Length: 421
Image 1 (cartoon, rainbow, N blue to C red):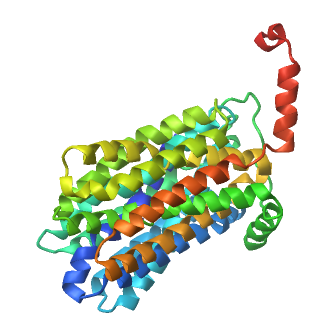
Image 2 (image 1 turned 90 degrees about the vertical axis):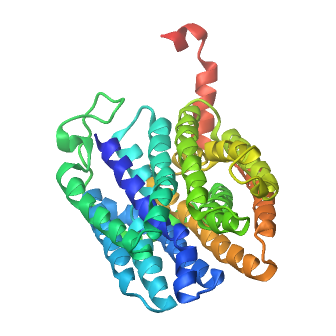
Image 3 (image 1 turned 45 degrees about the vertical axis):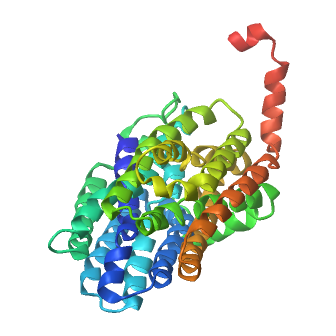
């Protein structure tokens, strides 16, 4: 039940945050804002979405997941609802950039790490894959609906109001049904036989988050993970989720049709990320990351040649191929954080995810500027493909944690009969 509630919250939060991707053209038509200007507002959203994550994880440790999640949904609703009154670009930055960014960042992949770590001993990789898929899929599946609403009589304002109302509607569900720890319901974590008492409330949340960063920053593993995940964000949320629709529009594809392709990417992402979670419980996560980043890079390198084919032929192949890999990197990255940082994994992963969103923010602005300069997105797609290969190489140089090496050594020393027992 907790995993299900988390899935719904993540789908909603991601969908609300990604809505501006379908509003680029309507905002340009009404206000005359450039792609770079709108891209900057989305960059603020993406950056805050990431930077908020480690502090949100610490706040969840201090005040509880339920309160933080409900407050985050209220922020999303407020930011979205007030956009109907905006008349200047700075208001878009404040409302959709700051308020929605802060709200969605509080229910992001750090939220995934908290739930999978607190509630599951067995199948942690699979659960983190399911929840991660919900977050990524929500950001894409909502887009066709939002795109359709923008073409209704009320235009983009109808879409903003719908997002606000839906966000408010999720608050009671979280407050009534969510529980903080398995022990609150008198049950052990899934896969364990022992009911674990909830830990005492942690200290200052900001100090907890900063200390987690200080300790992690002393290790090479953290920097390799953060750099790889920054590239991950640049090649997914920052580029594809933000600029795929306007890029397709440049080639004559209707906005609703392009949003439909993104939604289809979201459907295959759901499959791919769940599979990645299942594989993470069985395969070295470093190898998985290298494979996922390499395949993503190859798909992005060929994308510029596919736009002229619209929705037919190889574009569908790209959608399936890229979709399966869209955010499959999350379960192995969480697994490596658990391996290297133990109980601090949720907060450390929050910082790694912050790097993901900083990369996404840079990419969102840079791609918009590239489009304004060259009147074409092609250079952005090529750069993203090369960076993905770099992320694959960074994943391979991460070493196993000392504790993991000792565990593997003990396992190798056990004779087959003992393993079977």
